[in-house]
Length: 130
View 1 (cartoon, one colour):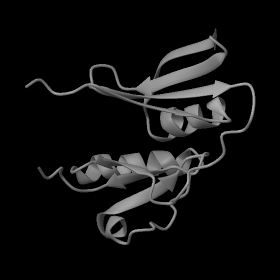
View 2 (cartoon, rainbow, N blue to C red):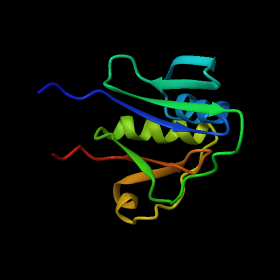
View 3 (cartoon, helix red, strand yellow):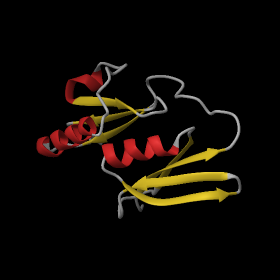
View 4 (cartoon, one colour):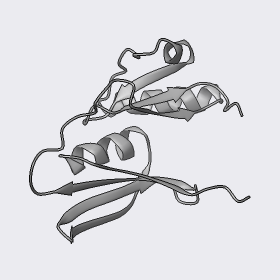
């Protein structure tokens, strides 16, 4: 079976704030941006050649609000200590401070950051375990 390609899509009230978090902070690329597409503006961020990206959309109208809980998170596994240190330093240099993890498990080998919408990203200094 081929690996699945995944797009994580969600609405936001502030596309530019998310672009800064995911591109400047996490080091992703802005892969595509659009405006006025059936009433939606949006961006897609990720890295060329990897089988996932994130799409954030904004529609004029009611606010979409923040994440429903502190456990709404995405985890990136970075087993190389130097790469992990660089990733954490880039987040902090971009103006994003770590927040305490709701689940203490993520504190042991990781740092948790909250995006402008309240969704959380964990940079985990560990290898992915099947």
